[in-house]
Image 1: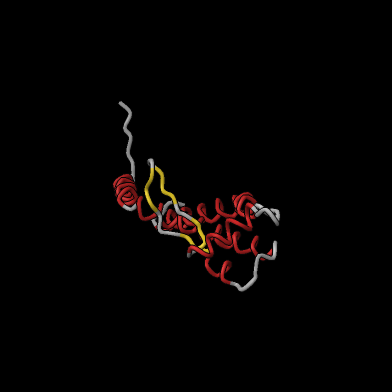
Image 2: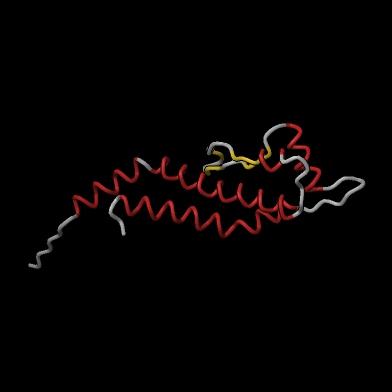
Length: 133
């Protein structure tokens, strides 16, 4: 009869179990990494379209904490403060006197690959820490 032996399976099982326990923490780190790239892209687009009157809008761009919603983890990107939210809205969509630049749409499109890379880098680093190369 054939005999099969394994080595390292107990260690692998332990690592997989530990990884499962920290999945939420890893997912949050990944979400924040992606959000930080998106915040940077929003700020870049604000500068690109010269939506800098007093610097308040660009300085107000931030992200919230990761939140679970419909079996997904989301992070909201926004302009902090009612006045800055209004500025973001008006510069994005425009007014009756000035056309909008749709800079948020452009930021989201331009940041997609950057966000994906940032998320993947966090995941890869977490896997390396746990011995998965």
